[in-house]
Length: 73
Image (tube, rainbow, N blue to C red; front, side, top):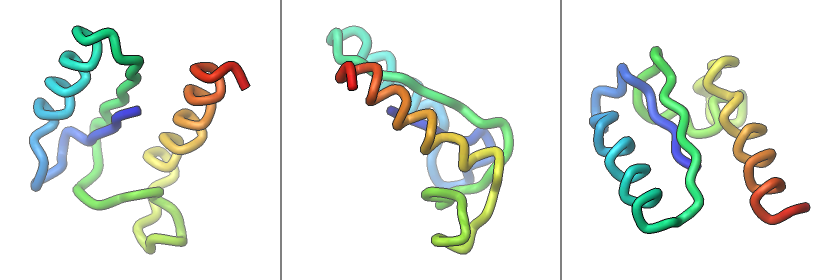
């Protein structure tokens, strides 16, 4: 599960896209989200990290859902 932001000043979003493409080419299950806004280093984007962003924080439950579906849990 990959996620990135278009405004990340330290990591080029296209590197994440390229990784996703390579995983798909290798038949490795992968899912990716690219958020329009947001800088680098959000992690879980909640109070635990001190970098709160309610929209970006959706990546974590989406990742859990994806993993549950992937492993049929």
